[in-house]
Image (cartoon, rainbow, N blue to C red; front, side, top):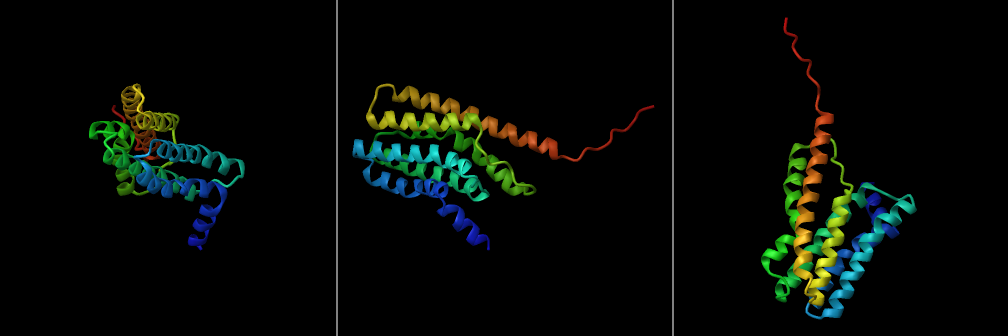
Length: 189
């Protein structure tokens, strides 16, 4: 039954908009060296990322499947883009790390929540996370287009990524405090 629910969620319009980023990532690997093709794939992925949640909410079809599939599709696409740009010499390793600071900062949080178990952690994107995603798309577009502003956009993305990761950690720690059992304090006479 759960399999059918996941399949249903992924084949609805919002789910299709989400999962299309996975094949787009592999297409990007093939066309990364062709500036206009790479920019077109990047634009299609950005559009899909911007629309999937909006479509799900408008159609009242938000789901746990979507909450899980969206960041996975994002990570697969991002990894393909980084590999394509690194392979093509458009991006150096330090800049790649700068573009991925949010992901690097949130990975230990994901592992912590996974190991800790208990109630499901909130997976909804925070505003700083969304701003970081926009910055990532802009920085990668500028790199592909070979604009002189690209290094500054990568640096801004790195800073936003650190702030976004910190906001996700802050949310999780606040959730932990709210869920922690309260112990009565001993009274001193």
